[in-house]
Image (cartoon, rainbow over the protein chains, first blue to last red):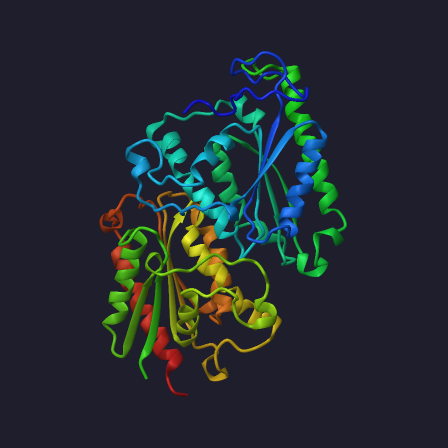
Length: 236
Length: 205
């Protein structure tokens, strides 16, 4: 696979230069949010909404996918993808990987359940094994440094517990997934101690932070495109 | 009274590395007198993910009706709970995570409703065994999974000091654990150690 981040002909508001896949002229920065919460419009999804709102306000095209609405099977651990390209399971999750590959920013959202991400988000991440196999076994998948700096991954999460280490189990999982999907792990938008606040709307800073980071990531990608078209070495 | 062992093979691949390791531990436990073992392969039962509705905080039960109803009672009845998972992408496999998350009903019972998980006389007399295999060899490969496993055991009333760990790195392909230099021996030792601890815990005082 070589088509990460290539334009599918989508054109929109002016926010940057073509990302080196042959487009001419400005191409919309695409921000994709994936909610792994089983709970519609809960704290985590609201935080994701705020992030996407910030990104949309900055001119990006945004879309959100709610994993709980997709009918999909978790990874079967068959390792068939280690021997033959691709996943043998074909279901509603399969096309999502192409959409992820076409995004400039991927925001993955999950509340913390039992010190980890939800089974839904873990279900998506485990199904990425075929990408791992491409990257590390077949070695047909490679992301250049330039690609990685133009593709930003963000983790969005809330946790009931107040512990500082409550997200620590989740971070390495996200790191692994961003690694195989070709995103630089750019930042987190996280809020713990939600059992105290009750609702994210009562959290003093979380929603504002989410909007601000959504806006900022689009700015960062846009500036990068403007200052150095893809394929040219990064300045400095 | 028999010593009741309830074991979960949570990986999607039947008789894969983590389940093989589990089988070795169970075989070792099974050699001991008075040990009664039940193994559940999660891929053969239906445990949906937690819906995050928090209804268990008031209802003291889960709103979902699936095989967790049966597993819930078995978890309470067991003296020893064994949880085996392959590590996928630095964490418990999503099937296993679903079971862990459905233990939320125990967490609500224990910490919100302040109700007992097991009768008073059985508190502190439950053992947990966490078994995991990982394809990767990096030092931190089990760290995230252990955090979730600890929570799972804590909410089902297994104390932190009463969790045994059996973690094997660098086994990925089907059957690879069979060729691991020490895994079988470690599994056997884990079973023996667990049996000894259970006998000590459950000895009439």
